Image 1: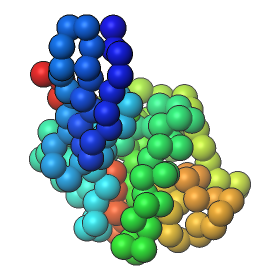
Image 2 (image 1 turned 60 degrees about the horizontal axis):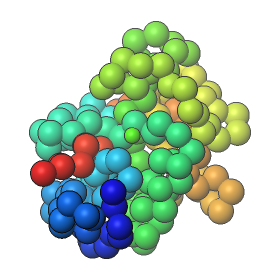
Image 3 (image 1 turned 45 degrees about the vertical axis):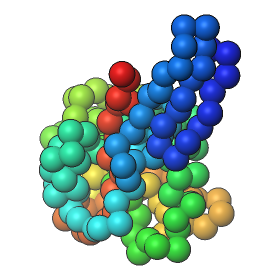
Image 4 (image 1 turned 180 degrees about the horizontal axis):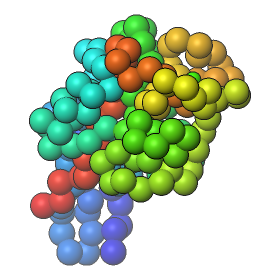
Length: 163
Ligand SMILES: [Ca+2]
Ligand SMILES: [Ca+2]
């Protein structure tokens, strides 16, 4: 039973009746409730971004629900001045037009946060989160389908390392 906890930069330290323990994210990653997130400063195509995440034992971020979308949007807002582009998510309909899946799990996308008039389809097969381009107070954190070869920042997600 957790008695209290302290949020450090990338760790959460729990003090419980069982003693002191912590769950951590690697250096450079941001700790969320269930996952660690890596907001890239570099830009890449969706394919290259996906490969880059896999090289760090992670995948492009899967947004499971409103809370996670809200958390990731808030994380990106903190460093918004440093960014030039929007951010790739793991979703794509490259396999079957109009059927968006989370690429790393092959699961259909249940929670969705499309911007108005999106997804616009055609050759736009990869999902980005609006942070810079086409983003304002109303649309930041919304999703758009975009041509996968375009350059974006990206967010990787991995599970928290529990000791
Ligand atoms: Ca997730
Ligand atoms: Ca679109």
